[in-house]
Image 1 (cartoon, one colour):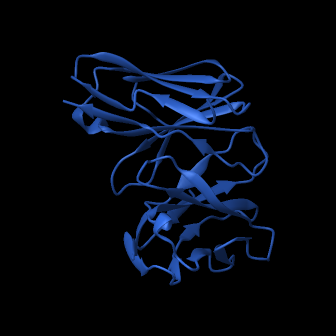
Image 2: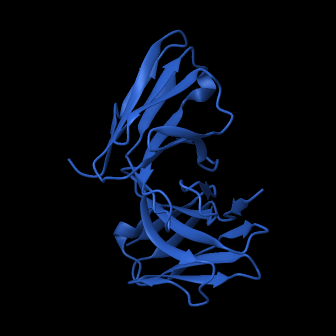
Length: 117
Length: 113
């Protein structure tokens, strides 16, 4: 069975600094998607960034980038120039690309990121 | 209204009560999901509906009963719950297939006394 592990329950970063959140996953499949979701204190979870496993190039969205190491099954999120609004719970998630009609995401336990002014 | 809306935002119920959670999406999606979020645990997928048909029931106890009358609405009927069912219940929607981005509601915080 696929699993997602986030080994950092909590992280802290100074405003304007860079922080990296870790995620590892376990799967025997080769075609899948990986995601980072952000859940601010208001609780609505939103997508931060997505990575297709067949793409070697790491995904980037403005200040957010990933380091995708397929062989190591590692998928870390780097936040550059951290802002107060980045404070949230961050979830790593995996989805098998089996061509099915629905998108069953498997989530990690989350990393609570605090941003210090 | 935009996105995914869940009501009520907070619910307190006794173990013998019957209540329902409601989810509505205005995104034109055809798949809807219920997730349970408990502290320090991964989000647990409960149910998946695709074009109103249930395609996943993740061994959820029968005291949770989902209903999906159409692709825009999803309900979770609750009866004879246990205190350990207290959690944040998240609804999400997506297009079927493709990259699979889920759009979430803000959740319903359930407390079972």
